[in-house]
Length: 113
Length: 111
Image (cartoon, rainbow over all chains, first blue to last red; front, top):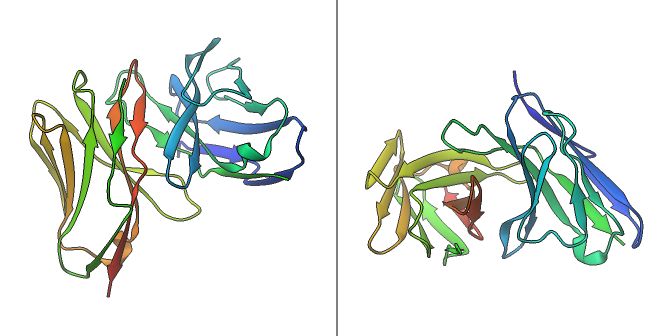
C-alpha cells in the first residue's frame, strides 16, 4: 500500500542546532507540503513543492528550508532550532490532477530546549 | 488572501445525536473545500469535500453543506458515535493547489 512516512517520530534538540525532518512518500504524488500544528492555530503551511526541483515558501517559512531532489522525498531543515519551533510537524502530499485532497503522514513531534 | 475560522474550539454531544461543526472562510474566488478528522498522535485524514457547484455533499453519516453567499460551511454527523471523537479541521483553497486550514474543533461524543 502507498504511504507517507515521517522520521523521526519524536525528536528533542537544543537551541541553535540544525535539525532535519524526513518525509518519504510512495504515492508518486507531484505535490508535497510541510505543516506545523500548534494549539489555536491549526495547520500552518511552512513550505511546499509542486515537483522535483520546485520549492516554495508558505505562511511560516522563516527558519526553515526544504529541497526536492526526487519525487519521493521532501526533507525539512531547521537551520538553527529555536524554542518557538517546538511543534508537531506534518508532511502531506497530493496529486495535481485529482481533487487536491492532501494525504498526511503521522507527524513528528519536535521539542527544542 | 484566504482566512478560515472555526469559532467553536470544542463541542460535546451525546451518542446518537447530531453533531454540527461550523466553518467560515473569507475568499470566495475558489470553489473546493475539505474537511479532515484528526485523532491524537496521528496525521489528519481526509473526511469529505464539497465543490461550489453543489450546496450539499453526503457520505454515509457525514454531510457537508456549503452556503456560498454567507461563505459558510457546516459538517453534520448523524448519528454521532464515540469513535467520532476527534479534532475536525476545515480547509479552504488558497493560491495554486494549497489549502488554508482552520484552527480545528474538538468533538467529544459522550456515551
